[in-house]
Every structure is written in C-alpha cells, then in structure tokens.
Image 1: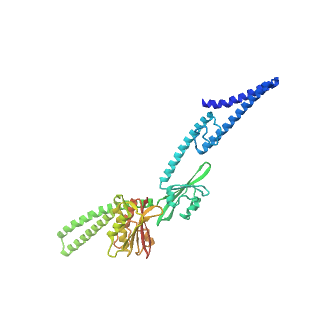
Image 2: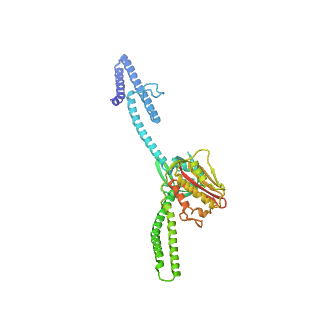
Image 3: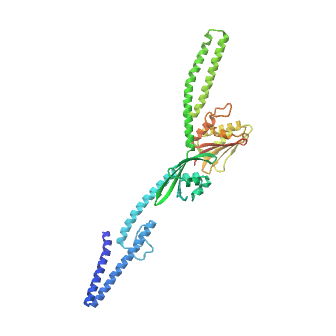
Length: 439
C-alpha cells in the first residue's frame, strides 16, 4: 500500500496542475476574470506543493545516500540533523527497506571478510598482498612474525628483512615458485616463495606466499634416516644373531674335535673372537635403535630455571666450568624435561670433549618470539664443513664416538616442534641454540 501511495502522490499533483492550467486558460478565454484569479491562485498552490514534494524527495534521497555511505539506518523522519522538514513517509518506508537489505548484505560480506582474515592469520604461511607498483595492501600475522614488522608500507620496506626480497617481489609473477635460503636468528632458513595475482574492483593485486620449509625438510630427512636405520638394524640383527649362536655352539664342540691341543685352542680363540665381535655389533646396533624408537615427549610447563638449573647442578664438576645466565623475566617452556635435559647434557659433554673451560647455559626470546635455550662454550670450535654434517646419523669426528648424540638431540627438538642450530668458529668456541615454537 505504501508503495502505491508514494507513486500516486506525484501523479495526482501533476494531474491537478494540468487541470488547473486548463481551467485557467478556459476562464481567461471566456472573460471570467474573478474566477480566473481564483484558478491562478489554486494553480500556484498546486505548483508550490509540487515544488515542496520535489524538494523533500531530494532531501530524502540525499539522506538515503548519506545513510548508505555511512551504513546508518533511517530510523525516523528527522534522523538527519541537516533536515529541516519532515521526510515523506511513503518514501521513508521504501528507503528503510532498501537500507535494511543493503546493511544485511554488508554484514554478511564483513563476516565473510573477517572469517577469511582470521583464517589467513592462523595459517603458518606468510602472505603479502601488494600492488604492481609495490604498495603493500595487507599482510597476515605469519608474515609479521617472519619479517619482524607490523605494517610495512611498500615492498621496499622489506629490505631490512633481506636485501634481495624487494627485488624478488617486484619480479614475482603468477605461478612462480622458487626456494631460497636466508639467515634468520642464527639459523639457516629455507623459504618457498610462490606468487599469484587477481583483479578486484578493476585493481590488479599480487599475492606472495612465503613458507619456511626448512623444518619440513629436516623432518623428512630425519624420517628417511629412521626408516634406513630400522631396515639396517633389522637385517643386520637377523644376520648376526644366528652367527653368534653358531659360534657359541661350535665353541662347546671344539674340545671333541680331532687334532692337537694347539689347533683346538686356535679354533676356540677364533670362534670366541667372532662371537665377541658379533656381540659388539649387536650392542652397536641396539644403540642406533634409540634413534628410530625415540618416545613421544610428555609435555609440561617448566620455567627456564627448572630446565637449566638442575642440569647445571647435575653436570657441574670440580673446575666449576658451568655457568647459568637467566633473564630478569621468568620464561616458561612447554617441554619434556627429561628429554631436554638429555639434549643439554649431550651438548655439555661435547663441549668438554672439545677442551672447553667455560660453558654457559642461557635462555631468552628471539625477535620472532621464539623461546630459546642456549649452550655456549669456549672450546676448539667446529670446522664449517663439519657443521653441516654433525646432525647426520653415524657421523662423528671422535675416535670412539657413535654419531647418534646430536642426531637424537635434533629429533627431540623436532618432536617439540622446534629446532637446534649451531654457530661455531675455530679457536673461539661453539654456540648451540634450542629454539621452541612461537609463544
């Protein structure tokens, strides 16, 4: 009904004006001047009514546009303080319905936008949205943590993170995929950089995705080594165990063999040597089973003092070479205390074997909000080419080493969703950093 009212009103006013004009013309032709004066007054009144209706409709339209622009409701005929006359109620109802529909759609789109922004902020891939000329539009939380900046304005602002990154982003094309290495927080990080583009409201935007694949590669490498070790230990154990049993059996029957005593003695010694070497190989392979059968960590909340202090008390020797350095603020780690202590003890033993006289255990937070534990020594240091291989199973530079200590340490940190990294200089010492997930 309201729709019909506001449609009919201008129609009736137009008809009335036309009728008044016709009547005025007829009266003027026939000389009815007094009646003509009345008709002209009536015509002027109708014209003024039409003018007022048009003026109020224009004000209503202006308020409607104002309401759309600022996402407000037309709650009453005087909701706009700039309006001096009441709005036409017949138009107000239609505009109110239109605004309700507009605001409902706007809320849906805003909810979808918030949903996708929250989703983008919770993934572990850094996402950067920028224009072809390098103006930054939006970045997610993972990107902020990676580049250590909250709101970069342009792509060139990312040169502080890495000098080559702005050039890579300027030349990035849709579908490109590359892997590059950077040094981040004392650790070499491998980033996979991918690109895509889209057009929104006539504007071309580029999306760059950066993902740290270093931990994933390390995890796959560790998994591959574990599978290899399982196969090797299984096959070697299946081959060695019967040999040991046969040597023990032959040793028992050696005395019943024909021949002189000297020959029998030599045979028994050879069999004992085979059995001893076989048993040693079995013990050797059993030690490697630890790498492939490491238990899952039992995670609890511990302070840095609890993790480091007890290790210092346990491993301190008569030379008092262990020192503890804790931050003023209490740091709490989610970790398996026994496994982390095993890593720390292994690092302390390695430092002492490398002639360290001062070993410092410390804790802190990196610029990327990673909690870390650190073991620093003043030993002989590690050669650069060796640093790249010390976490590989079976690799050792010690004459009596097994090559599993640092391998187990790295696996423990992977199970804590963290990492272990080393920095070392010959003649100056080494620093091992245990990084834990972002808090």
